Amino acid sequence: MRDCALLLLVITRKSSATRRAQPKPSVRWSGVQHCAGGVGPDTVDLVEAVAKWREGGTKPSTQNIVATKLDSTTKAPVLARPLCKYPTFPKYKGSGDVNSADSYSCQSS
Image 1: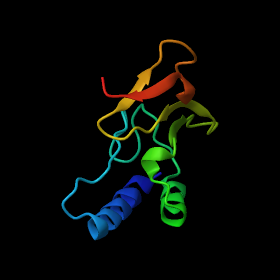
Image 2: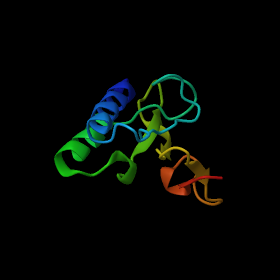
Image 3: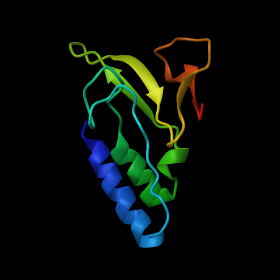
């Protein structure tokens, strides 16, 4: 999915129209190359997140968005991580399935 470029464009336009001097919100994906590829979870529906923000006022950083990595053959999810608002990152809680987003929380250290 190349939706990350669309999300950043929408965030930039929406933020600059309302708050020019303030920093823009962002997320970081561990193990993901620019928008897709790599060993990390690179599949996420950011268009839906932007639609919820635009139509309902729910910012993406409050939507509990989950990114997944799909098996290249079966297209079944093999791992998932929550997308965290920078500077936080998904940190393993210490128990549960290491491939499940439910086993991670967004933390700053």
